[in-house]
Length: 372
Image 1 (cartoon, rainbow, N blue to C red):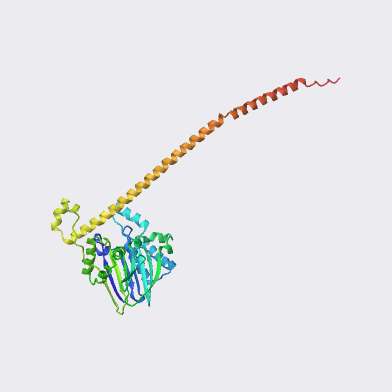
Image 2 (cartoon, rainbow, N blue to C red):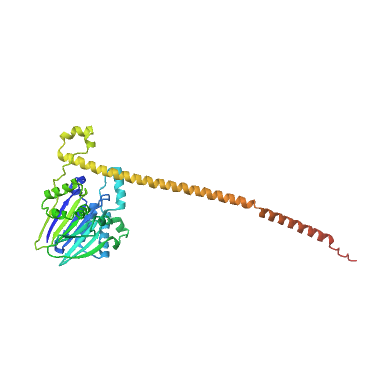
């Protein structure tokens, strides 16, 4: 088999080591895995790295075994000593995100003679290409891939809330000459929208061609601005494996945001700043803007919950006052009831009659004779 791995980070990530897609493979067991860490979750790239590495070292397609294995990975994730920001606001946000946990999609495969076993969770997709006919899994079109909304979340593993319903397992027959592509969601959507693009993708042989492929489709908005990852496997008699990833010194040629260029302190110093300094400043700015936006979203969510609590408290107090007033008025009505007054008068009259009877009885009682 010949294996080609393509990977490029999104432009907003700045540097390749910030990519949240992770892949892993093991040639002696013919295992391959690809995971797409969810952007808005905490340290998702580390979680994606843990589950892909675990799978290729412990390949299984039994639901409970893979759940147990990933549960171990989730424990390792939450026992890690993460370095959090020194900024109080961002530090607070990171801690809140850590409580929710990290999330990622997952796609794992293993080859055996004439057979391909697949286990999947989420919208990372597999394409089996044979004689120019393409079969997708778990999605065969754009509508289906939009419905693949599952994620593997670390916190849900720790709370034992992950079940076999989170995974899909399928077997495929394989033939000599078949091409299998594993792709994360953005690239999968491009392939599903235009099946012919797989020819262009498979023809990529170096990083410059990969960069040209991505920027071309990014520019015409046919490819979502996201991390791009693919594992391309051709079943043949060769034994070649190579990875096409950005060089260590690669950075996108992006200018600083206009808002920064209009800032006097920065604009005055721009001519004296090295290109790497500009890139670092841009990356730090983008990361800070993302953190601030997430913090604002969290604050808005907190305010909504606070208002809801206040409203519920007010409603509870109103109900309590109403119930108290109701019982007070009910007691007053009972005390003034005509039946009660009539009963009181009847008791009083009966008492008087009994007293009169006793008195008259005493008056008519004969005197006893006096002994002589």
